[in-house]
Image 1 (cartoon, rainbow, N blue to C red):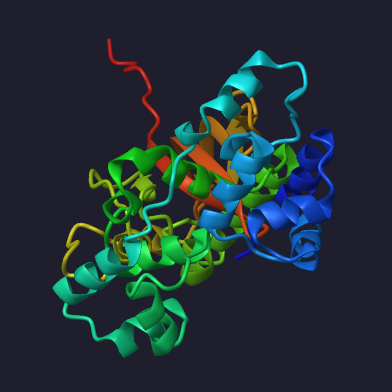
Image 2: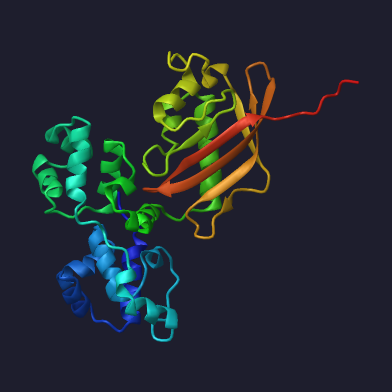
Amino acid sequence: MQINSHIGANIKKFRKQLGLQANKLAEQLLISPSYLNLIESGKRKIDADLLLKICEELRIEISDLKTDKFIDLNNSKKAISKFSKGKNLNKLDLKIGPKIKAFRRQLGLQANKFSEQIGISPTYLNLIEGGKRKIDGDLLIKISKELRVELSDLTSKSDINLENNISELLFESMTNVEVNAAQCTWAKHVTEQNVDQLLDLYDFGVPNQPLLFKPTLSKIIRCDRVSVRAYFVGGDPNYPDDKGFLNCGWKQVDFQSAVGPLPNPDGLCYRDMGQYFFMDGNGDITCADYTFIYHKRDGRILISLHHSSLTWFPSTDG
């Protein structure tokens, strides 16, 4: 997973705004000018510790790197004040490695098995747990998922803004057109009964921001792939009331948004509310109310919240 490519370009723009030469900033960061050039051109990932150091040297917050808005560092009293209070910038807990080791042992996980799960070598895991290697945001999230803990369990309480910013850096800007296309893809997989492809449209992968899924024909709110799958196909003894929504044999699904998908101000999230109509093989239509929230990771539009319920129609009796 790549951290948003525009962050490197933003680092370069902030550096130039300060009048800093690349070799001077590289020296301050204790990296080579060539490595800084790779970062600024979006060809290298940035670990959390280096990201914090860059922000401190550029006199900015982590959140400033997510956008194309730039601070007037020469005239802004706020920026000068921020820099003079340099220690206000969040610091990554450097003892995170031993915490990872403790949680791993609590789960009874062998080091070689755990390293395989997170896609690194046992040697590299040993260095991380010994506090001898830094961890980038992507690996930190993967570790949290496998250990079944929150990011806040691995970082200190004072780092809560840091963990939120790292998560936000993993999300990408998207458009209304992409969201509409994602809805069409969801409808396609429902009518074709492609359960695995349908599940891939949901984001189960951020430990401190789990999927929230309340489906139409169930009162159970679900947060994981197994329970969501049970709703769509049934047959899971842990969810005996699930008969399989896809087994209804829907032939057509149409979305009717109330006002169209709406973006958050930062463009990293879209939300939509409306009604969708499911037509079965007999031509009968079921109407339900929906709410979806979407974000984009690794170039894919994913669902982070899905709430659905049957549409209420007033009684015509009497």
